[in-house]
Length: 407
Image 1 (cartoon, rainbow, N blue to C red):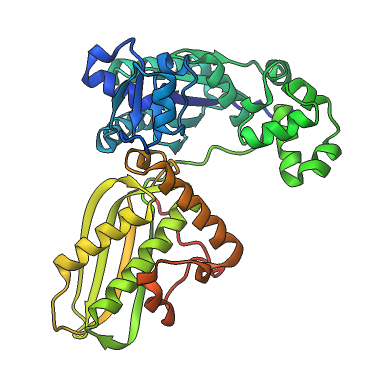
Image 2: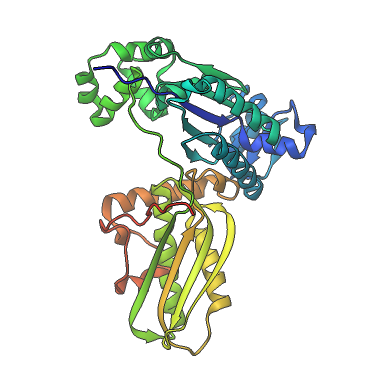
């Protein structure tokens, strides 16, 4: 039986994406250290230029620390609408050129070019695609190509900035071996410190360890890390599907005009939806309010917003839509809230508005929700909504981020 041909997986990553977009708008920023993020001292760095990274600055760092390390940096408050526009531009170029691709964040993509060698040559195709993106958008972009997603992503990191790299089939372990363990996707600072205490700092050391030892020390994730360190990753490129949404709604047993009750329920829904977004590492750019009155007339009103997964942002929009939409003295039968236009990206873009304290608060709330359930913590104003029964994403119900076919 003939063995199956190796895959050709390419990982594209737009270099310092937010900074690169700002430089398109203002060429005077070229060559200067640039910080994009919350502009207050309590803000967080969403993106930084390579010139700023030389001073030890990195994404996710408190802005006050970044400004201390690099006092001459140009500080820019991010524009999520502008970044979304350029992200979509790159997405459409990739969509036109490759048979299958996966968009994993606003600035990262995987493409499966397996089998293209018989027509063009996978590496040549990826090179032409990269050049087309640079030419048509003006944005720098790097890529790594290999037999799987893990090695390709690591290769992209090694190729940066604005370059490309191909790891030949069979060379995965040799390529990874001399690199620090933190280069492996899914290994953060905490795991890297744990491995360092075990005497493991290079991927090559990790490759030689018995997988059983890794599993004993770190559970299932230990086995997964060991496989990635050895260049083993069978995960497929998931076809990109843009049309996704999450929603919640409540039909009342008795129609109501209690505005306080309606607003409390709306706030609870917004908080629950925000939690789902963060757990799914997604951001929403559109919020829709749904109201059905006692006469069964149903109305919807939506608003486009900068990408976010923050409770306070969704609550603010939900309240605004409700005040515009609610007809006083009419009995309400149903109220609902939907978040759509979802993209991958965790909380990255919202760093423009969220302070470090706010980000830490959401992380703490999410930990409590995961451990103790939805009723363990909530905003005081939404306490009244707990008395009713409506869909709760924390109760083990099926996921509410369904995949829909693109139309």
